[in-house]
Image 1 (cartoon, rainbow, N blue to C red):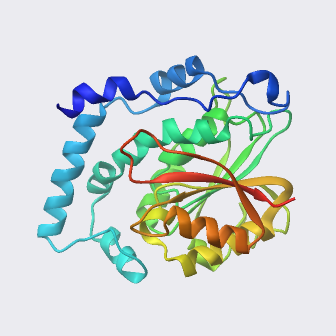
Image 2: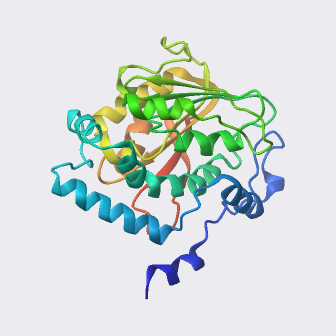
Length: 275
């Protein structure tokens, strides 16, 4: 059976929680909301085409000696050797997943009665930042962190909006997430100053458990008392089991998780401080 025949039966499902059980100050995402968001602002290319282009681009890069599923300095070198167009094709699968995973994990967790202060780690060219901004309440602010200057420039050029069409300001900082979390001025984030720390398509691909421990230590430092983190996991980098272990060591509990579809190799975990 071809992939195109399988996909229609695997539409993303919002977590099966009664809306009435979710506090009134938290985001509720219905299936209709999810479908509208994807139609209005999500990627327009279908997943079979995305997967095909991803495979062809990966093969071309491999033939040129560029292998991007790695860690440390090798990651920086691999992405530096890509064009932004090649990165766009490599990252298109992740961009497709963002619009299905992020709202599922924000559902029931994101406060909507006040603006949110958000950190988007390894934001690339802004694909994840765009999906985050869609669901944020007015007055929210995003700081994206991205090491590659070309990707950071592309992310900075985009104007981010929520589902009501309101602009969500974003500041993209060119810096490594392993060198401390930064605010919109490029200085060290104050303790307890962030409502959500987000990462997708990065920790599960490029970070060792030891590096992830550095990220979790910063999450524990910058998150407000009622803040939470949404961090991705995968066997190429830090696995779900490893992320869970590291999170627990830093005082976090896994309260949710989501994949974009059944065969996604990566998932994103939702973390809150252990009560």
